Length: 445
Image 1 (spheres, rainbow, N blue to C red):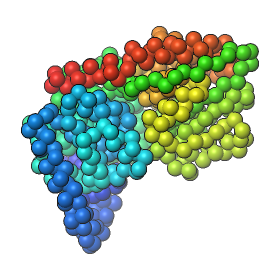
Image 2 (tube, one colour; image 1 turned 180 degrees about the horizontal axis):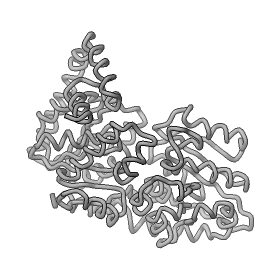
Image 3 (tube, rainbow, N blue to C red; image 1 turned 90 degrees about the vertical axis):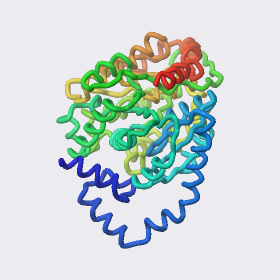
Image 4 (cartoon, one colour; image 1 turned 90 degrees about the horizontal axis):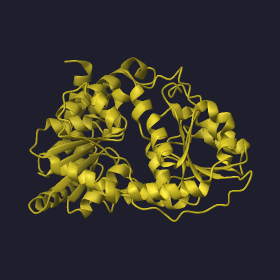
C-alpha cells in the first residue's frame, strides 16, 4: 500500500474533520487519538441524529415520486448551485450535502437551489452512513482541486445511482507533476492525481469548465465513457446596462472579483499562479487615473490579501475595496461599472502552467463580469479567453507585453458598443438556453 492510499483510507475510515484531511497522515493520527479522548464524536451524532434522519427520509420519500439529485461538496460554489436551480425548475428534487459549515452568506447563495440542505457533515464516516441510507437518481459531486477524494469516495460505493463529477481546475491539466511540486506537497499531488484518474475512468459523467475540445484531448489519457460536458457559469439574467459617453481621456470604473494572489508570496510563485501579476495591471490603471473596485474573495484572509490594502494606501480615492458579496448581489452591484479585469502580467518563458490551461481554461470571473453587462479585459495568452472575447466583441484581449499601452488601448474602445454586444452574448448563452444541454446530459446517463 502506497502512502497516498494509506492516507485516503485513513481519513475516509476515521473521524478526521473535513478541514484536516489535507494534513499529513502523521498529523491525522495524532488528531484521531486526541478526538477519541473526548466526547466530540458521540456529541456530534447525538446533536445531528434528527437532522440527518430527516434529510434521509426526505430524500427517500422524494425518490419514490421524482428524479432526485444529491449534490455533494466541500463548500458549494455558485456554478453548482445554478445547475441545481435549473434542474429543480425542470422537475428534479435537488438536495445538498456540504462537508463544511456554511456561513450565512454562503447559505444565502444556495438556499433557493435545493429542496433540503445538510451542512457540516464534517466526517467521511458520517457521509458514508448517509449515502448507505439514501437512493437518489443521481449523485453530483463538486470536484475542487485537492478535494477529489470526495468524487472517488462516492463512486467507490458502487451504488445504482449515477455519479456525475464536476471539475473546476483539473490538477493534471493545471501543470505537470514536477512543476506542481514547486508549490504543493508531493503526497497531496499524488493523491489528487490518483483520485483524478479514478474519477475519469469510473464516473458516469464529467462536467468541466474548459474548452470542450481541449478537455477531450486531455481525457484521452484515461479510459472513460466519453460522457463529458462543458458547462460554464452561464448568466441567469442581465441587469440593465449603463451607457457612457465616449469622451477623450475618459476615466473608467474597473472591477475585479476573485482570488487575490500576492505578488511576492513564496507559496504562490508567479510561474504557477498567473494572478500574481495582477498588481502590474492595477498599478497601470491607477497611474492613468482610472478607478478599480476590488471585491474580496470568500476564501481569503486579511494577511493573504494585505498587498491590496497596501496598494490602497497609495491610491486611497481610486482603489476601492469591498467585502465579499453573494454572486447574485455582486452582479447587481458591479453592473454600474465599466469593465471587468481578468488581465495580468504573465512571463510565458518562465511559466510552469500547462498547455491545457493556456489553451482551454476559462475563468469563472469572466462570466460573472459578463452577466453584470460588463466588457472584460483578458490575456491573449489564455487562448479560450481570447477566443470568447474577440469572437463576440465583448471586451479587449491583450498580450502581457501590451500592458504599458493599456490606458491608450482602452481609450480607443467604444464602451457602449461593447456593452451592447455583451447583452447579445448573454441572451445567446443564458442558463435557460445552455441548461438544455445540461438536461440532455443528465438524460443521456
